[in-house]
Image 1 (cartoon, rainbow, N blue to C red):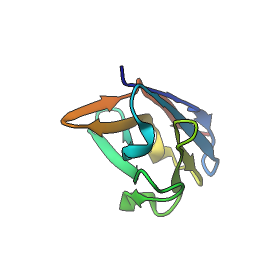
Image 2: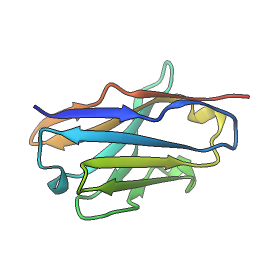
Image 3: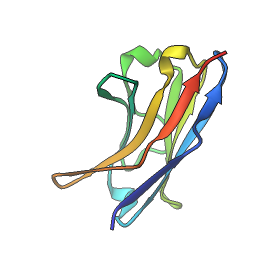
Image 4: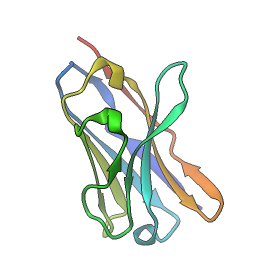
Amino acid sequence: QVQLVESGGGLVQPGGSLRLSCAASGFTFSTFAMYWYRQAPGKERLLIATITPETRSGGHYAEFLEGRFTISRDNANNMVYLQMNSLKPEDTAVYYCNTLIGLTNYWGQGTQVTVSS
């Protein structure tokens, strides 16, 4: 079955960087767009980055990210990444990997990112 497993979250100081990873399995990864969402405490889950099947690096981003994040993918290894730079306290959230297959949304378990001094 479809499985998405995120990793790479943690505690980082403001201005720092983290790289999130998402390992995908159970579907033909190279033919589906992939997405990163995030959900801050008490807030709705937001789409922050999208990458199309054939793109290796770069995609569409939420405007509030101000160019600080980069999404990429490795179709040979069924991986999608989110490089996060210049992190701010407001980036604190659970980050989720996602794909849409047919009418079904698939989610990972999420990885916590906390930006704090």
